[in-house]
Amino acid sequence: MNVPLGTKLLIGAIAVAIAGCGTTAVTDGDGGAGPGDTGVALRPGDITMMLDHGGVARSYILHVPPGYDGQIAVPLVLDIHGLTSSGGAQELISGWRQKADAEGFIVAYPNGLNASWNAGSLCCGQSQMTGVDDEGFLRALVAKTKQDARIDGKRVYVTGLSNGGAMAHYLACRAADLFAASAPVSMGNGTTPCQPARPLSVIMFRGTSDPLVPYNGGTFPSAQADFDQWSQLDQCDGAPQTTHAICNTRSHCGGDAEVTLCTINAGHVLYLQAATQGAPVPDVAWEAFQRHALP
Image (spheres, rainbow, N blue to C red):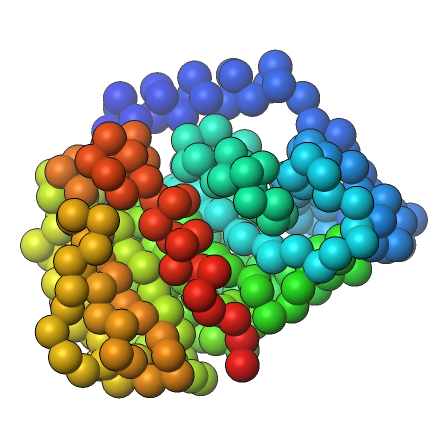
């Protein structure tokens, strides 16, 4: 998709900021990533990790919250960046780092090859055009993090913005065996076919004035079409209920799943506006995530 010049400049400014922040790079001798695979060696803060997938070195930032000591299994959230962006940029704008610090879970911010993700038939960039195995990479990332940290394997979740939101839809459709719930932001579901292995909770956020992924649809499905599709896939019945003032939720679904659509008066990168309108993405999504674990 075409990215407005202003958005590109914002991303560039964020990249400059990231360069000055600094993270600790960790690799191990066998080409994997990690501080020893002991479950207790990770220290709070950011660590840049590397792993080999399909003969390609892939990277991600692992954010470990204060107080983590490897003694208790904690949830893991993958927060996936948008087209032309990076894991570091996503960490700065999404608010998930702060939520992790408050609640005590680990967040992974993966980096897409060529700053893009192969998220199905509609999205996006070089990774989609060349058929990069991003599902395989993200599965490997979760497996490696379970080695490097003490992770509750039943409480692994995914979220993401734009191209990363497409990936969050894609993994909900294709990897319901691994992820307990998904929270796509600013993206329609372009996964064809979408055949989740079980009912899976999906919490969506869409901006009413989004010029790249229009709320009412176009190249990508509309917000209502996604809400209806996931409601059908999750075997929901009954009328949706209003939550957080600007969200609609169907909670009578198969497997105790729920489907939520939060409608934000905002454009494409909507995290700030969602917070000011009473539905911060990490707060709303985490509230739902805590209700759901793998069976």
